[in-house]
Amino acid sequence: MKTEFAAAEAATPMETRTPGGGAIVTCVRCIYDDRVPGIRFDGEGVCNYCRQVEDLTAQYGTGLPKGKAEWDRIVAEIKRAGRGKKYDCVVGVSGGTDSSYMVYLAKEFGLRPLAVHYDDTWNSAIASENIRKVLADTGVDLFTYVINNKESDDIFRAFFLAGVPEMGTPTDLALAEVLYRAAARNGVKYVLEGHSFLAEGVSPIGKNYFDGKYIESIHKRFGRLPMKSYPLMTFLRFMRWIMLGRIKKIRPYWYLQYSKEEAQEFLKAKCGWKYYGGHHLENRLVSFSIGLYLPRKFGLDYRNLTLSARARAGLVDRGEAMAEYARPPKVEDELLPYFKKRLGLSDEDYERVMRAEPKFWWEFPTYKKRFERLRPIFAVLAKANLVPMSFYLKYCFPVKV
Image (tube, rainbow, N blue to C red; front, side, top):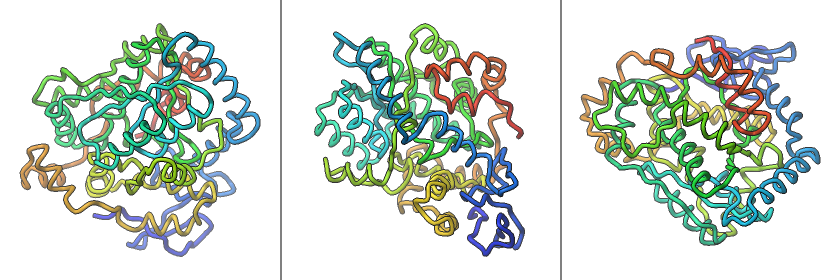
């Protein structure tokens, strides 16, 4: 079932129509519509997520002298804290555009990064080769944490059997935990993350959420193997890293002018880096989730995050972005058989899960209410870069579900 969205002729500045003829309201600046959780439109027809990007740009001075000055201050701070140490920061690498370019950016500003990779054993060959090329060209050392592949498959299988949307999130949280561990082991106080709210936006929680308690509860109910090698970030570990370890999360692209397209051209010319086909598609499990699982089971198509960001920034015509969103996601031919084989799913098992009633995060134990109660503390921590501002904005406020 294709997500019902079409680039139909607008009836009003914000109104479009689905293939079935029903009206939906769409932001006049991006392609978010009224099915996006928590969306609101102002009198100019602009959604609150576009306004959020405006506010963050002003707050961080993104791409402006204000942002560059703050980034220069942070760089000086990192260098001071790292004197006498082999590394002064760690950078997570996946083989994707943002993290690959971040390695070069760190080197450009005279930093001494340690590259850190969490291998969930679902990497594409292109992603693995991209990591090798970037680090060989820059001379940056790599620390890789590899989970037991059977345990990794068991965790992903548990999420699939649970029928929840967050198939790839165990990898996201594990990478965050591994970055903290690598930083602590090397006496480093700074983690550089390659997120850009201009290029990606700050995604709404809505039907997609994750934390350590959620992952633990899903696996406890649907998993078969004990989680021994998986680096689970519990609430206590999270607070230990930020309150006792004082390890800061820095997102340079929130301060600097950054273009994903220019970064890709730079990487291709510099080290022969190759594009992998789309946002987060350097991982085959995530590719399955975005291209097949989410659209069919949940009617969700998270390509709207990147397409909205590109339209918002004027990098693509809004109509072109809507037309691209109306087309089915690109999926490699052998991905579905590969997914079934790795997770030990018969055709009948797969179809039973895909036809079952969807489940969502609020039906399982999470830390969400705890994050909300501690919102004043996390507000202070976000301003100090001890937690990402996007964490504060997404996780510390109530969500209508």
